[in-house]
Length: 206
Image (cartoon, rainbow, N blue to C red; front, side, top):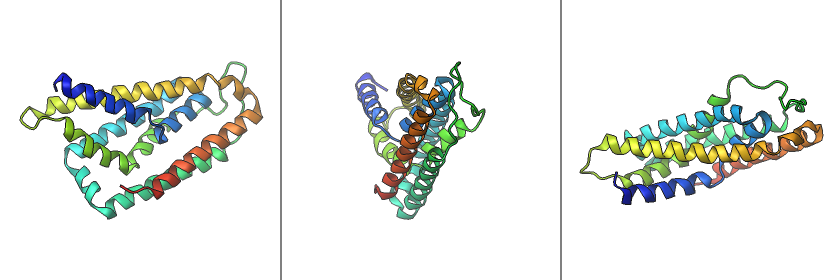
C-alpha cells in the first residue's frame, strides 16, 4: 500500500476509533473497575473480533450482511440484546469497593477477552462500514494479501492505542472506588451507557 493511500486510511481509522462506542465504554468500564491490565484483556478481545470482521469482509460475506436486511437485522438484534444485558448486569453489580492496595474484590480472571469479542462481533454496522471503507484503499491490480496485512495491522494498532487511552484515562479515577457510593454511581453510569448503546444499535439502520 502506497503512502498516499495509507495515510488517509490511518486518519480514517483514528476518527472511527476515537468516536465513542461500545468498545470505548467497555474499555473505560473495565479500566476503571479492574485496572489497565484487566482492560487489556477486553481490548485484546475487541481486536480479535476486528480481525474476524476483516476476514468476513475479505471473504465477501460482508457484502451479504450489507445487502441482506434479514441478516443485518438478526445480528443487530443480537448485538442490542447483548449490550443491554451487559448494562443491566453492570447496573445490578454488587458494590465491592477497592481495598487500600487498589484491588477489586472478585476481580474476574476470565471472560473479559470473550466479552470484548462479543461486543464487537455483535455490531453489524462495523462490518458494513468496513465493507464500504476497506475496498476504497486497496489497489485491484496489486497483490491483495500484503495490502490486507497492512490494513489489518493498521486497524489493530490504532484501535489498541485508542482503547488503551480510554482505559488509562478511566484508571485515573480508580481511587474514588474506595467509596461504595462512588462505586454504585459508576455501576449506574456505565450500566446506563451500555443500555443506551444497545438501544441506539437497535434503533439504527444501515
